[in-house]
Image 1 (cartoon, rainbow, N blue to C red):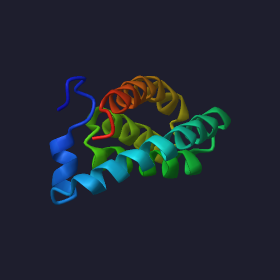
Image 2: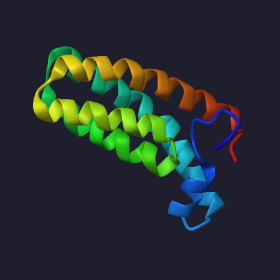
Image 3: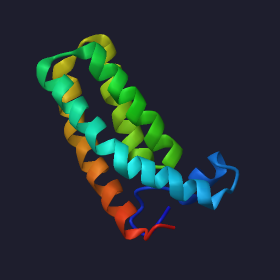
Length: 115
């Protein structure tokens, strides 16, 4: 993991077969696309739309897993499983932990310096 231990560059590079340029592109796409997806997820949780929350959490889970952001991915997976069950109260509780992990990942990516 990097110094902030929020994402694992080596794991991401394994997914990408060692392609550093692709990692830089993946990171840029993640930084651009994840914030609005997180906002949507929160809105779905706030309105109790478990179907949409499930799909949003699943998408975020996959994107963060590819980047090696394990904690963030795991927390998104918990939200997804709660939404599948229709347990939106638990999903909202998991969102708090997820959001903390998300903020740390975004901060670590900003510090990563484009590499």
